[in-house]
Amino acid sequence: MFESLGDRLQNAIHKIKGYGKITEDNIGDMMREIRLALLEADVNYKVVKEFTNNVREKALGEEVQKSIKPGDLFVKIVQDELTELLGGEQAPLNLKGQPAILMLVGLQGSGKTTTIGKLANYLRKKQHKNPLLVACDVYRPAAIDQLKQLGKQLNIEVYEEGKGNPVEISQHAISYAKEHGYDYVLVDTAGRLQIDEALMKELEDIEAAIQPQETLLVIDAMMGQDAINVITGFHEKLSLTGVILTKLDGDTRGGVALSVRHLTNVPIKFIGTSEKLDGLDAFDPERMAGRILGMGDIVSLVEQAQAAIDEKEAEKTAKRMQSGKFDLEDFLSTLKQMKKLGPLENLLKLIPGAKKMGLTSVKIPPKQMAHVEAIILSMTPEERKNPNIIKASRKTRIAKGAGLSVQEVNKLLTQFEQMKKMMKQMQNGNMKLPF
Image 1 (cartoon, helix red, strand yellow):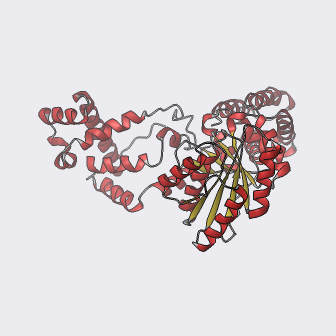
Image 2 (spheres, helix red, strand yellow):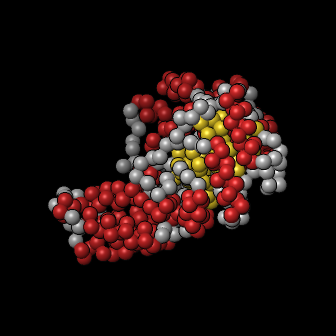
Image 3 (tube, one colour):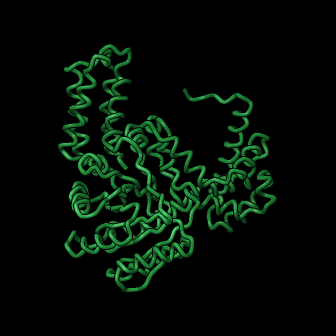
């Protein structure tokens, strides 16, 4: 997400870093590039104009002119303005109800039903509480079945009454949740291909009946600036407390995210980051601004690692690395832990300075990871603990077992030996850094 915008902004900002002083003359071209970058990212024209005016005004201010490194301070100005544009501060969910009620609304095709499953999964993992899913989309064919299937995959209960009255179903679900000790109730409502009177009346009636702590609009980021009209249309009839932007991982422009809060005053609370059921992240304006400007997002990286990695297993592996006893069994365990974090190329992008190090263009095909795993699993426990015993006949057997070539087995063994040597050098303090 935001790849093209990030590249353009970073290139524009890089030019100002070479200047000893910021003036009207040298800032003009750069501000023009920033303006074009934002417009090409599908950011609303009024938002672009206000943003560039604010940056220009602050960049030409007294403190920047007198700054020892005006370029660095300019980067800070752009980051602060981007953060403000994205909403300023993170907008957390209101989960104070007993149970807390979250009502999700949206147009058909926005990914609402899948998102409600992702959100329930997120709340269960982060809050360690018990969510209940409620099927109130009684019109779309197979909507109830889709929600039940999601519930089955996540092991989360779904309350449904078939094709009944959505208002009554939602009320019955709240009573059921109170009786059975559920902490959160997530209500999936019907969508339409467009906003119409019948849809909005039903949603208004459900909202009035259940009084949710959160009314969240799920919207497809690929809609571009049309999303603003949709948000405004829903907000006029409902008390929207936030927006969830889906498919943001598939939109390299991301302009709608930069326009939503400023034009509608409705905060973005979550963004969809992948199609997987754990592909939902809380939206943090400050972190997102840093990512757009190539500053990485170490906090998100650490949070993902904490959520996915077994701490005891990681500690055990680290000790074996330090003792020089790291073997292919440990390597396989590490590989399995890393897979839980998601695509490695996405994680590399969160590292500060990733673009300069060439990490943003790294592609690690899932097949390659699967091949490595297949090769190690085709070895005996003895071979994994002592790869030195793997000679020609063993390599042939391992390759056959993995369904791969002997050359690929050789490649893995060579890379593993190189990795062990690097570890040893790092432990001995002899590692020469490439800078």
